[in-house]
Image (cartoon, rainbow, N blue to C red):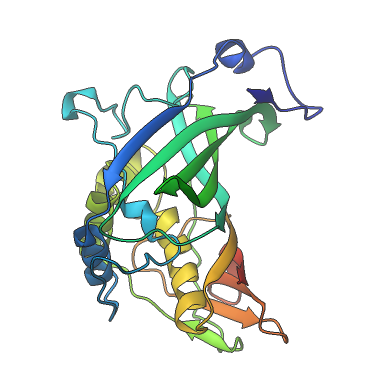
Amino acid sequence: MKRGTDMSLSVDGLDQYVQDWHPDPVSDTELLSARPAAALAATLDLDCELDVGDALPAMWHSVYFAEWSPTSALGADGHPGEGRFMPPIPNRRRMFAGGRLVVHEPLVLGREATRRAEVVSTAVKNGKTGQLLFVTVRYEYSQDGQPRLTEEHDLVYRSDTGSSTPFTRVDEALSARSAPWAVEPTTHPALLFRFSALTSNAHRIHYDTEYAREVEGFPALVVHGPLLVLYMAELARINCPRPLQRFRYRLMKPVFLGDAIRVQGDPAVDGDSVELSVVSGAGTIHASAQADYA
C-alpha cells in the first residue's frame, strides 16, 4: 500500500495507529437487479425506467454492493464499529471528501458484476481542528471479465475529542440563476431516510435530529454527500445525450435539511465537458464536479 508523502505527515498521533495497517483487497460479486435502480429513481423523483439489459447511469452503482453490519455492531454515531477499510483509530469520525470515476463501459442490469476494493493511499496531516487521516479507497467494477468502472473515494477521518464544533448554515436567499443548466431540488426527511436505506448508511446525522445537533454540532439533519454527487451527475446526464466517461467530484460544505440549494452546470463550448456545482445563498459552493463526455 502506497503511503502519502505530504510534508505534514506525522510519525506521532494518528499515524501510530495506521503505520502497520495494510488491509487486504476484497472482492464481491452481485447480480445487478433492476430493483435498486428503480428504487433510486423513485427516491429522486426521476422519470427513468430501467430494466434488465439496460445500462446503469453513471453514479447509480452507489445503490449496489451494499454492506450491512449487524445493528449490534454499529457505533454511537451509527457507523459500523469495525469494517474492511475502517482505520483502527480511537473515537473515529468519518467525512466523505470526494472522488473520481472512470467509465470504461457502463454496468448492465441483469448481469453479475464483481467489485474489487483496496486501500491505495493513507496520509496523516495537520488540519485546523487537529490531525486528520486521509484514506483513498479504489473500487474496480467488472462484468463478463471486462472492466466497467474504476472509482476512487477520498475519506477523511479524525479522532473525536468529545466536543462538537458548531456548524452554521447559509441564511441567504438563492441568488438569481445564471448557469445554463440548473435544478433546485427540495430536501425533506423522507428523502434522507430513503437514501440512507438504499445506500445502507446508518450514520445518525441523516435521520436523528437530536444527535446531529447536540453531539456533532450541526444545525439540522445533514444531506448525504453522495446524494449531492448524484444530483450533479444526473444534471450532466439529462442535459446531454452523450454518456459520461469521467466524473471528478469534491464535497466542501454540508447541506442541511431544508436548505434552498441549486444544482447547476456550465457546459464547455465544445460540449465535451461540463463544470457542475451545488450552491446556496449568494453563491456558497457546497460541492463541485467536472464531467467529461465520451
